[in-house]
Image (cartoon, rainbow over all chains, first blue to last red; front, side, top):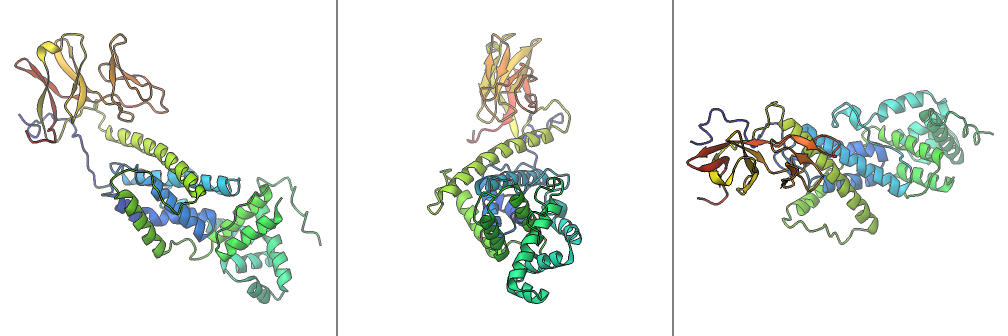
Length: 191
Length: 229
């Protein structure tokens, strides 16, 4: 009597479904971009995003079990990215500036990768014109301080002050819940 | 407060340089958070460079295709990289364990008692009938399968001898009549049911193995050993 001919045979030892990765390269190819973008949206610069993405994959791939489903692998990569990002903030600024939160959406979906565009659009809407303009020029359009000053017809020194104040006000709006005691409001925005 | 540190950090972000570490206060941290949001909302930002993806692919291939699991000795690594890297690896190990658990739950969706049977197996001798009197727990190790066999009302029954949590090998605690895991204090009844555990999620019961008694020999259905017979 062999196992194959046994009709009462319970489930087999190995289940190989279609929703699994064949090897680590498939894991990497399929997930590198969203992992990088998730991190970039939380550090805002290429150098840190590249370092941390490399750290995630170097840490995650060796212990990874390929028997895990694709969804589980992605959840695991997001969890690893969360830990790597938290360690980065502890090591550099001592504040958890940003985090990778638990969310319902699958990690590769846009709402999981970054909600910055929607939040920034709302934020800019709430700012006075000059402040919105300087932030758009400097950040969203990546213009130099000199170009921005020329565009806004102000001096370079003025453009710097505008940028400084705009970011302070934007941070207050952004973190309204956290800074609603007004402790910082207006302390430097006097003429 | 550290206005110079903040200014430099923002300038670095805008110039896409690696920002230098400093100790911001809460409000400075909020400004950095907002600046990062603004950077992330920049159209086209956030896509990885193809050269970066290719480089990392090579680095991973070097690490993973190296059969000997020696600690990664990157000579260029700075102390901070090593420390951060180590903590990430530790975190990943924890995450791997939780994936492990998910996998185990997933495998039991059939809702049966978790019987294990090999795709390509054969009946293999684990004991002589006389070795397994009533009430005894007889360990066996076939290489491919480790387990315990015992008699229930004269009929042989077998369970896996590998903890369903992380795969540690179980030992039989005769006086307490239970299988114990040396790794995380989990214990199982001889039937495979979990008796005690200290894990956040209860481990699965031990899978039962198919067992039969033929001509004075107790056999378990198990995968063929690696060596040709």
